[in-house]
Image 1: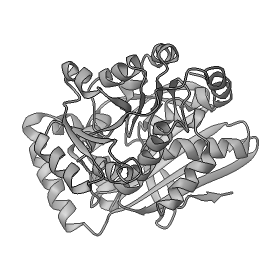
Image 2: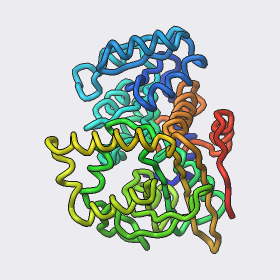
Image 3: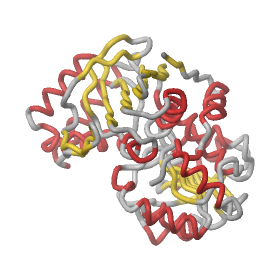
Image 4: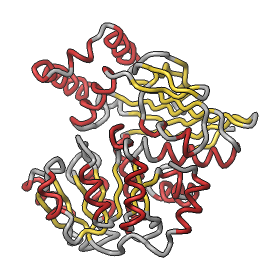
Length: 376
C-alpha cells in the first residue's frame, strides 16, 4: 500500500486505463438503514441507472417503486458467489451497504473491471490488498475501500490534516455513537465481534496487542463535551502508517448515554462479549437494545473527531449531529457519484485518502447539510 503521494503518481500513470464508464449503479442492501438513504440520494442524479439489490425481493421491489426515477430491483444474496455474475450484468458501479463474510463480491467486481466501494469493509478485507491492487491495475477496476463515516469521512479528515500539519507522527480517530440511534443488525454483530477479539494497535512505530474497550482516554467531542473513549479497531486506522506515514494510529469509541459506556466497559472486563455472541444468547441482548432504542429515541447524537500531531503541530477536524446513518449515507453517495461519473477513476484498490481530494468532498457534504469543523 503506497502513500497518497505515491498513489497520485501511480494513478497518473494508469490514466489511460480508466474504469468502465456508464452502466447501472448496483446498491447492495439498498433497502437497509444506510442503503435506502444512499439509493434515494443517487436516484434523481442517475435516472434509470440505480438498481436496489438484496435477498428480500419484495422489500427491494417496494422500495424501488417508491423512489421512482426508473429505479429497479434485483434479488441478490451477497454471500452467495453463484449469484455474482447475474447481479453484476450491466453494472458499472457497485455500492455495498451490507456486511460481507468474505470479499468475494469485491474480487468479482475487480475481475469485471468495475468501480466499487463499501460503506464499512471488515478487517478481513484488508488482507491481500496488494494482490487485489495489482489485479485491478490489469482489469481497470477502481476500488475505494471505505465510504461511510469510518472508514470514509474519517479518512478524508486525516488526509486534509496531513496536508496541513506536514509529516504525521500520530493520528487518532474517535467516534461517539448513541444507543438511541438507528442501526441495523449487522452493526450489533460487528460490535460484539470487535469486543471479543484482540487486534493489533500501531503505536510509536511498532505493533502491540490490544483489546477493544480498554485504555480509556478523555476525548473532547464537539457539542457534547469530554467523554471517555476506549480503543476500538476502526478499520480506517489500519493503513495510516502506510498511506500517511503515521508512527501511531489509534481508534477510539464512546457510547451514549454515559452509563452505557461504563456498562459496556464492565461487560468487556467481565468477559461477557464471547457469551453474548452465541446464537442462543444473542436474541436477549437484541431485544434489550430494541427496547432501549425506543425509550432513548431522542438520544441519537453522534460525533467524529480526528486529531493529528506532526512536525510540532497539532490539528483536528470534527463533525457532529444526529442520526449517523444520514451522514454515512451522504458520504457514501458522494463517493459513489465520483466513481460513477469517473471523477475518481484511477485503476487500483485505494483508501479514500489516497486518491480523493478533500476539498470537493467536504464541499459536497455541505450540500447535504453537513459541515466539517477544523480546529487548530
